[in-house]
Image 1 (spheres, helix red, strand yellow):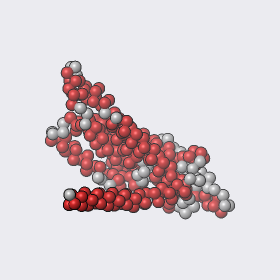
Image 2 (cartoon, helix red, strand yellow; image 1 turned 180 degrees about the vertical axis):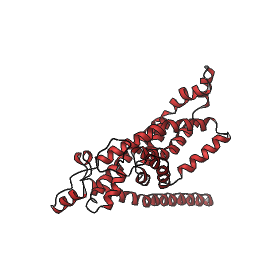
Image 3 (spheres, rainbow, N blue to C red; image 1 turned 30 degrees about the vertical axis):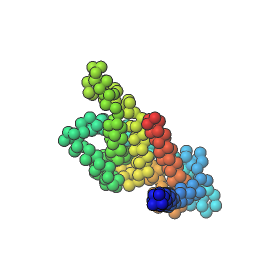
Image 4 (cartoon, rainbow, N blue to C red; image 1 turned 135 degrees about the vertical axis):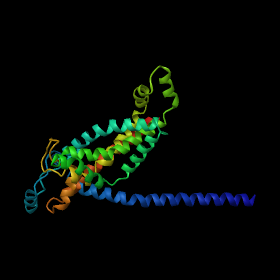
Length: 290
């Protein structure tokens, strides 16, 4: 009995020690994240205003004059917000249907040789650095068009979004009950119709979650947009001309001493946008599982 009690006590002690170790490591991991969020929040909170979100970026001269006069810098990031939303919209319009159909193909033909090659290429594309994607799109789109444009920027974002959407669609369709497809086939539908009319609607929650995660993944990318969209100091809706984006503005603010104070407001906006997307994705995933 004494030996058994000692074994139980030892196990309980090891369990508590492991629990405390995990909690400590989790706390240490969260320290850098909380430090970054706190710094951006404290420095950027005062800058977020209606004018900051609706006015274009000020020129370096206007910013310098405002600093000399001791006044806040007039202007904002509206040109970056418009450019970001425009390029994300075009990228999503191309990546979502392509990624969903590709994921459905991989889920239905997982054992075929072609599907294995596509799956391997998807993993390879997901691990490709964004700067390389930007260079490739520069050669494929910018050079033939003879200029930077929103089209080129959206093409780069589309390529980056595709692997995430493909994987989310594939994995979501794989976990659907087999009886769902069998019932559709028993009612007289062919494989393509059952996939499009039965399986995809049933998997919509998981696929939409993957789409939101893909958007939050690419919204902060700067390197590919430097090679494709280039940037613009005013609000522009033309898709065949250079256009700005919030990550590009942050990079431009960093390189201009007169505009560096605007980094924090733009960074806070980007963090809040990504946070909202991730929270929305988690809530949708939780409801879909239920």
